[in-house]
Length: 176
Image 1 (cartoon, rainbow, N blue to C red):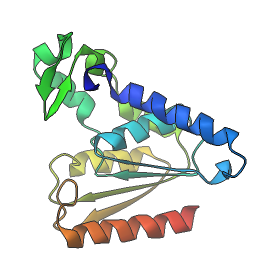
Image 2: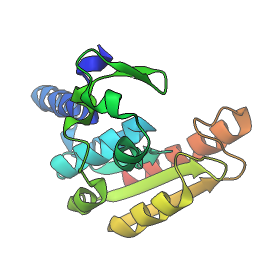
Image 3: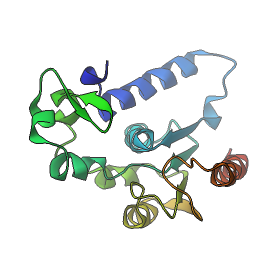
Protein backbone atom coordinates (compact mmCIF):
# COMPACT_ATOMS: atom_id res chain seq x y z
CA UNK A 1 0.00 0.00 0.00
CA UNK A 2 1.64 3.24 -1.11
CA UNK A 3 0.31 5.21 1.86
CA UNK A 4 2.63 3.16 4.07
CA UNK A 5 5.62 3.44 1.73
CA UNK A 6 8.52 5.83 1.47
CA UNK A 7 11.90 5.83 -0.20
CA UNK A 8 13.27 4.80 3.19
CA UNK A 9 10.95 1.80 3.58
CA UNK A 10 11.99 0.80 0.07
CA UNK A 11 15.68 1.11 1.09
CA UNK A 12 14.84 -1.13 4.06
CA UNK A 13 13.39 -3.64 1.57
CA UNK A 14 16.69 -3.57 -0.35
CA UNK A 15 18.51 -4.32 2.91
CA UNK A 16 16.18 -7.27 3.55
CA UNK A 17 16.90 -8.65 0.06
CA UNK A 18 20.66 -8.32 0.63
CA UNK A 19 20.28 -10.10 3.97
CA UNK A 20 18.47 -12.98 2.23
CA UNK A 21 21.08 -13.11 -0.56
CA UNK A 22 23.82 -13.39 2.05
CA UNK A 23 22.19 -16.61 3.31
CA UNK A 24 22.12 -18.28 -0.10
CA UNK A 25 25.26 -20.29 -0.83
CA UNK A 26 24.79 -20.08 -4.61
CA UNK A 27 24.97 -16.26 -4.66
CA UNK A 28 28.33 -14.56 -5.04
CA UNK A 29 27.73 -11.70 -2.63
CA UNK A 30 31.03 -10.13 -3.66
CA UNK A 31 29.49 -9.37 -7.07
CA UNK A 32 26.17 -7.72 -6.24
CA UNK A 33 25.04 -4.76 -8.28
CA UNK A 34 22.25 -2.39 -7.35
CA UNK A 35 20.23 -0.67 -10.06
CA UNK A 36 17.37 1.75 -9.59
CA UNK A 37 15.25 3.76 -12.01
CA UNK A 38 13.59 7.12 -11.27
CA UNK A 39 12.35 7.00 -7.66
CA UNK A 40 14.14 3.66 -7.48
CA UNK A 41 17.33 5.54 -8.36
CA UNK A 42 16.88 7.65 -5.24
CA UNK A 43 16.17 4.47 -3.27
CA UNK A 44 19.35 2.90 -4.68
CA UNK A 45 21.38 5.98 -3.74
CA UNK A 46 20.00 5.80 -0.19
CA UNK A 47 20.45 2.02 0.15
CA UNK A 48 24.01 2.08 -1.19
CA UNK A 49 24.93 4.84 1.26
CA UNK A 50 23.42 2.81 4.12
CA UNK A 51 25.20 -0.39 3.03
CA UNK A 52 28.30 0.88 1.22
CA UNK A 53 30.06 -2.49 1.27
CA UNK A 54 27.10 -4.57 0.06
CA UNK A 55 27.32 -3.68 -3.62
CA UNK A 56 30.25 -3.93 -5.98
CA UNK A 57 28.65 -1.45 -8.35
CA UNK A 58 25.70 0.92 -8.54
CA UNK A 59 23.61 2.01 -11.54
CA UNK A 60 21.26 4.98 -11.31
CA UNK A 61 18.93 5.15 -14.30
CA UNK A 62 17.22 8.53 -14.75
CA UNK A 63 17.36 8.88 -10.95
CA UNK A 64 14.85 11.23 -9.35
CA UNK A 65 17.36 12.72 -6.92
CA UNK A 66 15.23 15.86 -6.76
CA UNK A 67 12.40 14.14 -4.85
CA UNK A 68 13.56 15.44 -1.46
CA UNK A 69 13.62 19.04 -2.60
CA UNK A 70 10.33 18.63 -4.44
CA UNK A 71 8.73 17.17 -1.32
CA UNK A 72 9.16 20.59 0.27
CA UNK A 73 8.77 22.94 -2.68
CA UNK A 74 6.29 21.25 -5.01
CA UNK A 75 4.18 18.65 -3.24
CA UNK A 76 1.04 19.94 -1.53
CA UNK A 77 1.09 20.45 2.23
CA UNK A 78 -1.92 18.13 2.60
CA UNK A 79 0.14 15.27 1.10
CA UNK A 80 2.91 15.91 3.62
CA UNK A 81 0.53 15.68 6.58
CA UNK A 82 -2.24 13.33 5.41
CA UNK A 83 -3.01 10.19 7.38
CA UNK A 84 -5.19 8.69 4.60
CA UNK A 85 -3.18 9.82 1.60
CA UNK A 86 -3.34 12.29 -1.25
CA UNK A 87 -2.73 11.57 -4.94
CA UNK A 88 0.69 12.88 -5.99
CA UNK A 89 2.00 12.14 -9.50
CA UNK A 90 -0.28 9.12 -9.81
CA UNK A 91 0.53 7.62 -6.39
CA UNK A 92 -1.47 7.82 -3.18
CA UNK A 93 1.04 9.17 -0.66
CA UNK A 94 0.66 9.96 3.01
CA UNK A 95 2.75 11.59 5.70
CA UNK A 96 4.75 8.32 5.88
CA UNK A 97 6.34 9.19 2.54
CA UNK A 98 7.36 12.63 3.74
CA UNK A 99 8.18 12.25 7.45
CA UNK A 100 11.89 11.48 6.94
CA UNK A 101 12.17 12.89 3.45
CA UNK A 102 11.56 16.53 4.31
CA UNK A 103 14.94 17.86 5.38
CA UNK A 104 16.82 14.79 4.12
CA UNK A 105 19.72 15.60 1.80
CA UNK A 106 20.69 12.58 -0.28
CA UNK A 107 23.79 14.34 -1.60
CA UNK A 108 25.18 14.43 1.95
CA UNK A 109 24.86 10.62 2.18
CA UNK A 110 25.95 9.55 -1.31
CA UNK A 111 29.73 9.89 -0.71
CA UNK A 112 29.57 6.97 1.74
CA UNK A 113 29.38 4.70 -1.32
CA UNK A 114 32.86 4.50 -2.84
CA UNK A 115 32.54 1.79 -5.50
CA UNK A 116 31.92 2.40 -9.23
CA UNK A 117 28.70 4.21 -10.14
CA UNK A 118 27.05 4.78 -13.48
CA UNK A 119 24.33 7.35 -14.04
CA UNK A 120 22.35 7.12 -17.27
CA UNK A 121 19.66 9.59 -18.23
CA UNK A 122 18.29 11.37 -21.27
CA UNK A 123 19.04 14.92 -22.30
CA UNK A 124 15.28 15.59 -22.61
CA UNK A 125 14.47 14.38 -19.07
CA UNK A 126 13.07 17.10 -16.80
CA UNK A 127 13.22 14.86 -13.70
CA UNK A 128 16.78 13.58 -14.00
CA UNK A 129 17.88 17.10 -14.78
CA UNK A 130 21.45 17.93 -15.76
CA UNK A 131 22.22 20.01 -12.65
CA UNK A 132 21.30 17.12 -10.35
CA UNK A 133 23.22 14.65 -12.47
CA UNK A 134 26.31 16.85 -12.55
CA UNK A 135 26.08 17.23 -8.79
CA UNK A 136 25.77 13.45 -8.39
CA UNK A 137 28.74 12.85 -10.68
CA UNK A 138 30.83 15.18 -8.55
CA UNK A 139 29.59 13.59 -5.32
CA UNK A 140 30.58 9.99 -6.07
CA UNK A 141 34.24 9.00 -6.01
CA UNK A 142 34.03 6.85 -9.16
CA UNK A 143 31.21 7.93 -11.44
CA UNK A 144 30.56 7.45 -15.12
CA UNK A 145 27.72 9.42 -16.70
CA UNK A 146 25.94 8.46 -19.91
CA UNK A 147 23.61 11.05 -21.38
CA UNK A 148 21.32 9.54 -23.99
CA UNK A 149 20.54 12.00 -26.84
CA UNK A 150 16.80 12.65 -27.19
CA UNK A 151 16.15 10.47 -24.13
CA UNK A 152 13.08 11.29 -22.05
CA UNK A 153 12.25 10.08 -18.55
CA UNK A 154 11.75 6.32 -18.71
CA UNK A 155 13.31 6.08 -22.18
CA UNK A 156 9.92 5.50 -23.83
CA UNK A 157 11.35 5.63 -27.36
CA UNK A 158 12.83 2.28 -28.33
CA UNK A 159 16.16 3.59 -29.70
CA UNK A 160 16.91 5.51 -26.50
CA UNK A 161 15.88 2.51 -24.39
CA UNK A 162 18.21 0.23 -26.35
CA UNK A 163 21.07 2.73 -26.11
CA UNK A 164 20.61 3.02 -22.32
CA UNK A 165 20.42 -0.77 -21.91
CA UNK A 166 23.59 -1.25 -23.95
CA UNK A 167 25.45 1.29 -21.78
CA UNK A 168 24.25 -0.42 -18.60
CA UNK A 169 25.27 -3.90 -19.78
CA UNK A 170 28.71 -2.64 -20.84
CA UNK A 171 29.20 -0.95 -17.45
CA UNK A 172 28.11 -4.03 -15.49
CA UNK A 173 30.41 -6.30 -17.50
CA UNK A 174 33.29 -3.92 -16.79
CA UNK A 175 32.63 -3.48 -13.06
CA UNK A 176 31.43 -6.91 -12.02
